[in-house]
Structures are given as structure tokens and as C-alpha cells.
Image 1: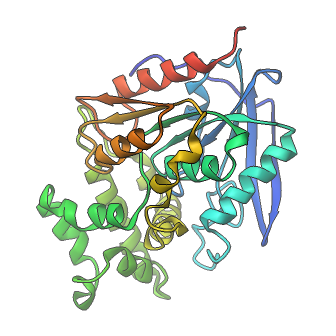
Image 2: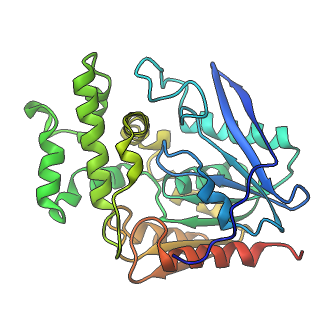
Length: 319
């Protein structure tokens, strides 16, 4: 792994009451007088762990992390089956980001997002372009219906045995329909055994389709039953609604990003998010640089991490 910046601890943190019974966990670390930078984690449902802090020079940046609604430290926890997701939509998350920006007294910030965090970052930047100084994005997704269908069905052509197991976990009569809808129904079952099987098989499939880069290891977080449930509930919730966005809107409205410098880092072997998604976005966003890494897949490995670090270093202010 490329050398990251040294571990840092938050100098401030809190719980922001964003309404609808939700409280969002946030933290700041690095230099309190540094350039503001916001991290938008993936999933949906992964949470913003300490790793994300190390993608920035802590002497130059005021690094802001938040757990999106339902992600464990933010409450209520989506791992609890009784937690309603009705007030957990992209619109709610965008409003939370703006409320946090105002709460912290930040005028504009660099926004870094990975995977699902890219979808959220693009939606935020297109809605609030004056609040985004730069974008650093990796494993680019738009969470369109086509992308969801690709991950949950068409990708079975690449991993046929593993996909058959993923499909066969749902009731027979539902296997020819929307698999993300079928899993969401199982995750809402009153039977705990049905919910647990759905969460386990969903996360098993997630581990398969991100496994194309050299040295891939299964995600240890999936061994935690609460993480599995939280992750599976939130991913299926957002995917079955195609991110609660008009289909194709992020690419259509990419012209709103004009004047925002950006770097998009994407693995050419990314099966989860095929590179054409990033390429089409780069054609519509003239201020963006697309960095394609030939031998890597989804997420951050050696060369993709180096490219993300190079991007945050490029945009850092003098120290």
C-alpha cells in the first residue's frame, strides 16, 4: 500500500441534530486553520473510519468526516430492523451536509468521495457549486438504474457461479425480477433468520465483485452481523431507488460543475463500476482530469491510493 499520511485523532467531534429524529456524527482533524476538506464515504452504509483522515496532509487541511444517516455512530442505527429509512434519502443527506457546513462555519470545501460517496459528492456539487472548491473522486459511480442492474444481474456473466448463489438466495418467484428489490424485501422480513441470510448473501456478493484487483482480501467488516445488516439495508434502500435521483441527472447536469477543478481516479479493472461511467462524466466536465489505473479495480489499492494522495496534495495550500 502506498504510504498514507500518519494517523491523526480528531480535535473536535459532535452529534448534529438534523431533524426527523436523526443525529449525525461528525469529526474534524488536522489543522483547525487549514483548508476545509469534506469526506463522503461509500456504501451507502460504510461509515467514515480513521483511514479517510490519512488521505490528506494534516498540516494543510481541516479534515471533516461525517457518518451519513443510519451509519452506526449516526443515530438511529440502520442495523436495527425497527429503524425506519423513510427519512434517509439523498435529499436528506445533501441537506445534512449543508447544515454541517454552516455549523462548522465553512464557506467552501474540497469534497472527496469514493464509490457511493462519488454519487453523493456530484449531487452536492451540482446543487451547491459555490460551496465546492475542488472535487477528488475515486471509483466513480452515478448509481443509475443501469448501474444497479449491472451490479445485481448483468455482472453474473463475469462471476456466474457466485452470482447464481446471490440470485438463489431470494424466493424462486422473485428471481427474474429486480434482485435489489427482492433483497430489500427480505431485509424487511419479520423473520430474523430471513433478514440475516439476506444480509450475509448480499455482503458475500459485494466481496466478489470488488475482487478483481491484485491482492484483494475479503472485507473483515462483513464478519460483524450489525455491520452486515446496516450495510445491506442502506445499500438496497438507495439502490432500489436509484439514489433518489432522476435517472441520468448527474451526467446531464455535469455542466454545473464548470469552474470546479476535479480529479477522478478509476481502476480499469473496476467491474463494480465500469470505467465508461467516469469517462462520460469527464467528457461533460471540462475542469476534471480522469486518471485511469490499468491494473486496479474498485476501491483504493496501491496506485489508486497514490493518485488520490497526489490529488489532495495538488490542491493543498502552502504550509
